[in-house]
Every structure is written in structure tokens, then in C-alpha cells.
Image (cartoon, rainbow, N blue to C red):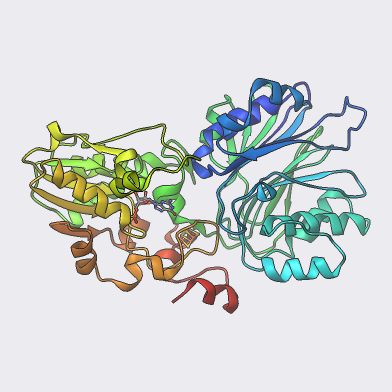
Length: 463
Ligand code: 5GP
Ligand code: SF4
Ligand code: MG
């Protein structure tokens, strides 16, 4: 998911949140929402809410944004990992408290959602949806209604949560940002030319509204941004940084910066190392758009094999509401990616992608390249085989669907019908960053889960 928030005392900020969400669209295409608080209204403690299924551009128009008045606003783009795909699960969520409405936008996934939900139901809260995020919102309401102030109440609630959470929150007084003690999902702070603060999942969300990057919200930190400025509270004493390495490799936008490092540069570097680790004789290097492109450019630079475009992506194919016909579905990938015959004919092609998850896309791509005239297709992947499911907010499926969990690299090569296949090693993936190599979650490549996953949840996704 993508989360975003702005507090700018002098302006209606929903428009800024809209643009921020636009830049974070890649983090979730299922639903989008914005809430705002307006101190000028008769009901300053009540959040104004608009959310709907679909892309940011489909959900909002000028009229809707004009209704979301006020100097405090937060937004969310949803990608469902827990809870089904329906409007009840769209965010930001709003709950009533004794201090007024509390709004929350969550990126990540709690591993103790079932336990937390059970406790809150026992405490008499009427939880409505199946999403883990609702548990966090009601835990805040519970603490506020016990008499705590906002900051203490939020901290008390955060301490009941286990798992991955980057949160952007809002009340009638402030916006707030928080990360779990591992910092699994990203969250950054920006500042506008007028001094107003912005919170965004990624730095690309700051760029689009002209905000400057200040720093990350730290693992285990809560930042509270009100009329008097930004106040930092370390709510967890011993954070253990474990940023999701898959954010670096695939999920985040290449024009975002994490740990001070350009993701485009990092991905290009992965391609360079891949070319040295697993060289191949070929005439052309191509990337699978868009995520495989930076690594393909790096592979070309290091190998000396020319880079070219071999697959053209239709940029307007999103998660569409109109399902393709069966016949179209069988031809599958062509709706999104079309091979460029003129470039591929009679060439030995190296095709670079960032990852193989189920292997179904890869097989279709390889077939399409061969049908378009490539005489050899060699695949190089700029990450190790995905062998384990993610419990922290990336939808890489249950283990039985992960081709790397049960098949060897050689077997996968046969299944996807390539002439050769190689993956990047785990050590190279980590050493290519400028960050301490211990500061990443790598569980989907290693099974080494930094946040303990309760057995019941683990068993639901592991073979
Ligand atoms: P596969 O061959 O496994 O079907 O597809 C691999 C492609 O899926 C890669 O291009 C990669 O960018 C993309 N991918 C990687 N992780 C995920 C994920 O969690 N969800 C989705 N929808 N696609 C992913
Ligand atoms: Fe990221 Fe993989 Fe860890 Fe999930 S398991 S947080 S996708 S590195
Ligand atoms: Mg891809």
C-alpha cells in the first residue's frame, strides 16, 4: 500500500495528498481514499472521508477534492494482503474517540491481527472489517477512551501490534507517522517550501509536490506533526532495522531513494553484478518492463552486449474491472507486453527480470520472444529465487505457488522454456547496497523471518 499525509496550516491540502497518492499508485491499485480535517467547519473534530475502489485517477475528481477541505489530510492506495478486496477494507479508516475522529492509513501486515482483533472484540469494540489495520485504529480509540492523550494513546496502541506497519495518521490537531520496530515498510518525512511537513511511503511522493526530503521515520519512532512543528517519540527502545529488501529490488519506484541510495542505481548495480556472476554469449539484452529495465541496463553495461527494447508495455493496462475473454486470457501477457519483432528476429537474447514468483509471467514472456523470432532466450534474474511467502505486506502468495520453493533452478529453466537461467546470489543482492547487510529482511529468499510469525499464520501459507 501507499500512505501519504500533509499538514499545512494555511491551505486546503487534499489536492497535495491526491498528487502524492498518484505518485504512490504502484503500491496499490485496488482502492484509494483521502480524509481531511477542517478546523473552520462546524464539526472540526469530524473527518471528511472519500474512498472508493479503483485507481487514484478513477476515484477522485476536482469536485470530490474540493469537498475535502482543511489543512490536515492523509491518503491511502490499497493493495490487499489480508482482508478481501472490497470497499469496507478501503482506507484511510476513521474511528470515533473521546477526543474526536482518528484516521489511519496502514502499509504492512500485522502478524498478531487475529489475537488483537479477539482482544478488541472482548473489550466491546465493534470491528467491522476483516483488515488488520482496523485493529490498530480501534486499539488507539481504546487507549484514548481510557483517558490518554493522542501521543500516549497511539504509543500504547502501537505496543500491542506485532508485524510490519508504516502508518500515517490524522486527528483534528495533527498528522502523525509511525514505523514498526524493524522498519520493514518505508516511510519518509518531507518539508514544503513554506515549512509544512509531508509524510510519504516513498520519496517519489515528495518529488511530485515539490517537497524536500528530510529523513526517514526511524524504526520504532512516532513523529507527531502539529501547529508547533515536528515532535519525535521513540516508542520502542531497541529497534532492529530490517527494511524489506524486495522494496529495493522490485516494489518501490526506481526514482525513489531509500537509506540515501537511489533505487535506480542499486538495480542497475544488481544487473552489473549479475553479468559478472552469470555471463552468457548473446546479441541483445532486454528488460521486462518496467521493473526489469534498470538491471538490464546494468547487465548490458557490464557485459558489453547492446541494450535494446524487446518488449513494449501498454502503460494503460492496470488492474482493470473488465475481465478479458477466455480467448484473450489464453494469449495472456500480450495485453500488457508486446514483443518487438524487428528487434528480436534472429537474435540471441538475454532477458532480465527483477524476480520470478510463480513463473507464469516468465513462461509467457519467453514464448512470446521466441514466437517473435529470437533464436535463443537466456533469462537472468536480479534477485535470488523466491522460496518463502511474505507475512509482512507483500503479496507473493503461499509457498505452494512459489516456483522457487519446490523446483531447482534447472527445473525452473525447463518449465519456463529458456535456453539458460540464472539468479543473482543473496550475498551479491545485499553487498550491492550501501547499507549494513544485516539491516534487511530477506525472508522470502531465505525463510529467515525477522519478526516471529505465529505458527497458525505460518501454517496457512507454508507447505
Ligand atoms: P512470474 O514469472 O513469477 O509470474 O512473474 C514475475 C514478475 O512478477 C516479475 O516481473 C516481477 O516484477 C513481478 N512480481 C514480483 N513480485 C510480485 C508480487 O508480489 N506481486 C505481483 N503482482 N507481481 C510481482
Ligand atoms: Fe520483503 Fe520478502 Fe521480507 Fe516480505 S519476506 S518483507 S517481501 S524481504
Ligand atoms: Mg516485473
